[in-house]
Image (cartoon, rainbow, N blue to C red; front, side, top):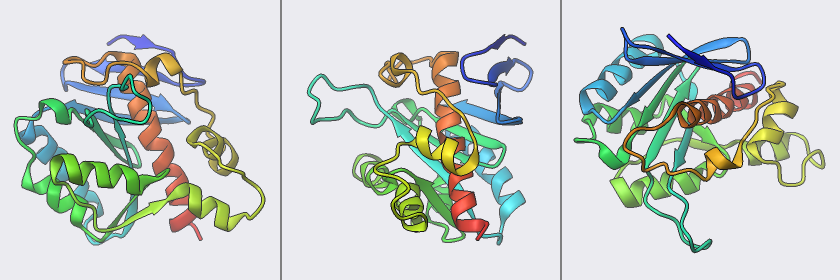
Length: 211
């Protein structure tokens, strides 16, 4: 195993025996699966369903794509990140051999509410580009602004994470604007992608599940 510190109080290690990353953040170790294989995605979904079947909850959702030189345009989504508690899946959509039916069913399962900032835009992009549909979603920015009128102007994920759940995170621009279509994502990208999805999950859980 090897570790790198890139975020406040966070680190990432890779376990060669399981082919999974462990991202430590917020006092929690998030088991992170990075894959472009349908069989591995299917395995992750099955594990989540075994833990949360018939238990309505939220799932942090985020996507990344390679920056487009024309600001008003965007490239095809390269990754899809899903996080529920201490389990994160990072799918390299750009290189998937196929998208398993189990993942499609998981996204369409109304027991799960997919959460993120302007998550409807991400979901629309996933539908247009990959035919993936989510049956239930919630915008954590809109929820927070309704909960606390006047407290926020237009908060980003970093702002909401610190203000709503006390999670302090960095969003390094050189990682955010990196090549998410890379055949092999580096540890910076894996950690960034995981923490973004985890932050969305934690904020969504606070706003929806802890009322």
